[in-house]
Length: 231
Length: 231
Image: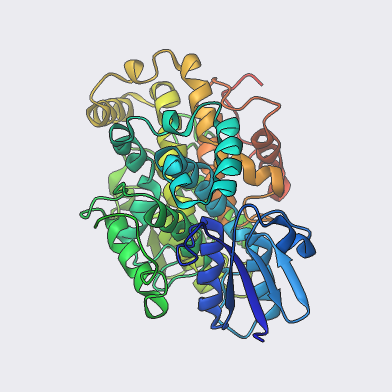
């Protein structure tokens, strides 16, 4: 039995892990060099993670420690493994703003472009839960949310300018090498890559080059996951 | 003669230092506990800072060192004074994204609300330079840029949500105490405070509470500067 286990969101295909928050942690564990068994988890399997007092993944079991919530897991990893490469520069609070922007601009913007692609990955029971909960959140059908999405792409891409400008100056969000700031951002783009055929980034975009570097990290860890996009 | 001198932008009134980038450094110097003589500088006084190979302020003279550009100065201060409180968490590149957002969303958004207030602070020669260069940049008169600005405030305030959410979680952008991330953001709001009567933040906004804490730092260093706003 592996000492370390990570519960990660998927749909019918256990290889297509798509949660942006699970991807933050998958990359964080690789950054720390911590071998981890990953366990596929579906929206309808609440009882499987009830032991962690959580209704959502990621959930990490590390020996006798159980930690839920991606932010708490990342903090835990730097605290528990201080001699391995740091995820946070200095202290966790220093990346709160980066995460806040990723949640409210990047991931919220991506959701409006790709959320209607997600039910196609899910089994019947999960699909019912997902569609009902998300339609309630958006106040409209998921097809209405993503209607005319090609036309909305330019405005979304423009909203990424603060991130793009950084990646015109340095190879990673964190500087010369990646840290949790990169995994925070990467989670969103990886989510889109796995669930949607929509091409979010133009190939000429500096963000596209960064994304390619991220996909190459840790022996192509993320690149090995089937992408929905044709490209 | 003080060992340390900072050239800072002002207009006819030498007390009303208003550059967002000079404010970043004024606060950074106080954070490091470095006494510094500040020298008022005007847009027309290019020859006074030519020695630094710079056309803009801030410019810092520190003993035999001369450093121009706010980012370079902040990096210099952490490098030259490593035993004093750090400005950057870990390493400077970690705040590139924060600075990029502040430049492209916060300061660019503020400029569209307040730029027409700036000529009123300037002498005739500076005013001519400022109005011509900024009207060229915006492609319209400064009055056109800020037309209907009260109506544009809700959208601008909404664009601050990623920052606001952080300050609902922790007292400073950097966490429990401020660092350069706070001074980066503060520079923009302080610029608006000194040049414009427009009330940028509602008093109920968590950003307003943070701004009050920032104005109180270092014995009320920034609060002592005359504000243009009535409040």
